[in-house]
Amino acid sequence: MNRDFTQPGGVTQSRDIAQSVARNTAVQFGQQLVTWASSFVLMLFLPRILGPERYGRIYLAEMVAAMFVVLVTYDGRFSIARRVSRNRAAAGEILVNSIGFRLGLWVFSLVGMLMFALAAGYSTPVVIILAIFGVEMVWNASRTVLSGSFLGFEVTTYTAIGAIVEKMFVSAVGITALFLGGNEIVIAAVMTAGSLINFIITAGYFRRYVPRLPRFDRAKAWILMKEGFPFLLWTIFGVVYYRIDTVMLSLMTPEKVVGWYGVAYKFYDVLVFLPSIFTIAILPVLSKLYGKENMLLARTTQKGLDFILLTGIPISILCFYFSPDIIGFLFGIENYAPAVLNLRIFAAGLLLLYLDMVLATAIIACDKQKQLAIISFVAVLLNVGMNYLMIPYTQARMDNGGVGAAIATTITELFVLVCNLLILPKSIFEGSSLKVLWKSTAGGIATILLLGAIGRIIPGIPWMVHAAAGGIFYAGTLLLMKTFRPEEIRFFREFVNLRGLIRRIVPERSGGQ
Image (cartoon, rainbow, N blue to C red; front, side, top):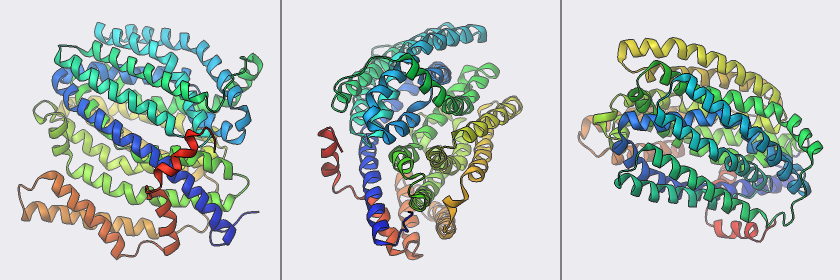
């Protein structure tokens, strides 16, 4: 029987859900703080020392490798997490069989990627970097399965530890290599070594949950392959959609244009931290609720969308307004000035991506991955067509084809958002309210006006202080408008309460829930 949020049983269960999401969100947020700091330091040096052309090579190789690794990662960690969350006793069997068939797909991915690189006429450094990243695919795919298995247990601590060690290693060794004269190939090797360390750490911790692994079962692996095929299609289309712009840029524009686009896209990727953390934490919860507690599933999804709206709007506004300062501070405006417009276009579509990620998570939890794959396929066609038209157009008129690629990405994201809203069960939106939407929008508009006024009244104010004032004003505006009811504040408090973080993590370290 479905329970309403306001009934005693529903309140208790919703509080348990919020605490589970809060625990994993807090762990992921702690990971992000450390990995951000490490990545931030590397970001300060890598594009500056390598320059747009050499940085463009390693960024291009990352994007091409991300497209070909999809076959090896197959149905990704979300599919694994859903299976494990529904049958934790079979976690070892799922792990072994999932990794087993992926190893067979690795050869096809590696050969296909190198053949593509040669056919595209990429420079020798790019081909070498792709070969290095191709070797990494083996443990990258295995780590994806491990991460999904941990997520199925609603545990994120151990994957966070692995990620932290990886980022700190890559930053420390990478920066040292740069100052010793290392080039983009050396940096690629350092990244690959860091990824291997991450896998070793993650695999070691998994023994706490499954001490003994069963043997590989070909028949069961085949079943997993068939069940995961819709997820594979969705992942392929999604990754191609997000990475094809870089490949098309590399074929239509000089390497420096790819470098300009790369720094803007990298920062855009960094800003996706919030929905990434949130969806990782909430997926196993939604998966368990589907078909059992549908009203609670709907309410949890609605609260998730509210949370993303409230946080995504100020992030998008601040990124758009301070794009020149961000590019100048991180990468150097003298070499990367054209990236400012790219970043502003991405900032304008950032909120769309935030919403899409939460909606896609709910769609997966509702077992509608086939429809999601169809949407992704159409999005790929739309995105490729728009890039084919927009990249040469903006390259010819602005000497920056990345502007066209950024526009194509933003418009396609809007298309995906509309489709996601249409395929979700209507019950997800029952009892929902537009109050948070219009109040957060009003707060965003007021913040834009304030930022402009401060810039005119106090010229020369440090941009970080300026941005902080805008963020504080936005939060204060929401409080003045009484955006939340008391029960909503209690619900959100579970997400942001970090006071009990250590207490929440302790059960994970004991190897159980």
